[in-house]
Length: 437
Image 1 (cartoon, one colour):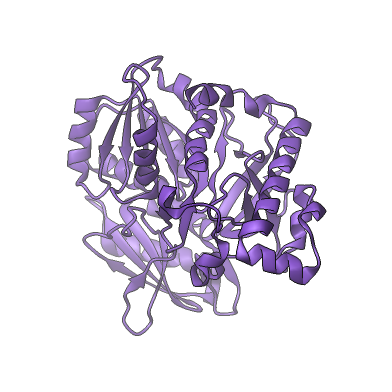
Image 2 (tube, rainbow, N blue to C red):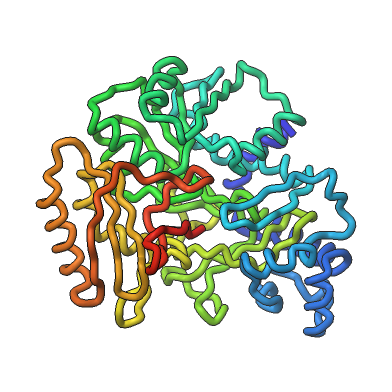
C-alpha cells in the first residue's frame, strides 16, 4: 500500500487515453459484479434487457437509472453486495443519513489516492519530513472514521508525518493555543470553519502560529474569503472534492482552476433536470459512479451538487479532466416568490461584501419569497446601520421577490457534523432551522 501511494502521485500525468481505458476496465468489472451480486442492478438490467457485456465505457451508464440519497436510504440492502462480508467492511454514514459499506481494499485504496493531493500541498507546506498536520474535524466525522480504519492497517512512521486532532466545537481561543503548541505545517478542516476562524482572528487581533497551507473539503469557502486569508495571513488554501458514499472525487492542483477528477476510480457525469448529459461549460448536477467499492455499489448516484466542467486541459500537466466550479447544493436553495430557485453559491456570492464585517451569518429560508438573516456581529459593528445595508442589498438583488428580515444572535452552532450551514431552511411556524445536508 505504501508503494502504491508513491505511484499515485504520477498517475494524474498519464495520457488521457490511458486514464479513460483504466476507468473503462474498472467500470466493466464493477458492472459484472453488480449484476452478479447486487439486487437493484440485477433487477434493473433484467427489466431493461441489458447484460453486463453491454457496458463497455462510461457513456453506457446512461442505460442505468439515476439514483439519489433517498433511493439508497429507503432500500439500503438493494445496493449491498451479497458476496462481501459486512463484518469486514468500514461503515460510513453521511451527514444526510446515507449508510455506505466500504470493502477493506477500497477504503485502503482511498489512502493511496490521497497521495495525488499530498503531491500538491506537501511542497507548499515546507515540510520534507515529519510534517505536522492539524486536523480540525468532529470526532464522529467520516474523515476520522476512515483515518482510524487506515491506522489499524497501515502504520505511518513519524518521520513522514505527525497528525494532531482538534474538535471544531472547541472555542477558537483553544484552537489558537493548540496551534501555538503544535506549530503545524498544514491544517485540515471544513471550508466554512476557515471563514469563521479567520473572522475571529480579525476581530480579536490574535496572531497564532498559522500553517503555510490550509486544506478543506466537505463544504464551501467562497473565493473572497480565500483571497482575504491568503493576503492578510499568508496562508495558502487548497481544497478537495469527496463524498462519503463515493470516496475521493477530485482535488485542486497548483493552478487552482478547478478539481482534477479521479476518473480512473470514479466516473463523473453532469446532468440536467431530465437526466441528460450537459455540455462542457454548462451547469449540471454532479452524478457519480464509484468504480472501486464492491460492498455498497452506487452507479449514476446524484450527489446533489451543481457544477460545470472546464473545457480543455490544465498547464500543470495533469491529464485528469477539470470540474471547474461547484455552485452549491441542489437542496440548498433560496426560492423566490415567483418560484425561481437560486443555489447557495450564487446566492451568497451576492452578499460577500456585506457579510465580511460579521463573525457568522446564516440565511434561513422560511418559504418561497421569505428569508431571515441570523447574524453574529463583530466588535464595533453598528447594528442598525448594518441591518439597513443588508436589507438594502436584498432589495437590490431580488427586488420584490424576497421579503427579508435580520435577527442578531449571540452564536450560530454548527451542525452535528461540525459543518457550518450558511444557508438552511426553517419551519415557518416555529422559526427554527433544519440543516440541509
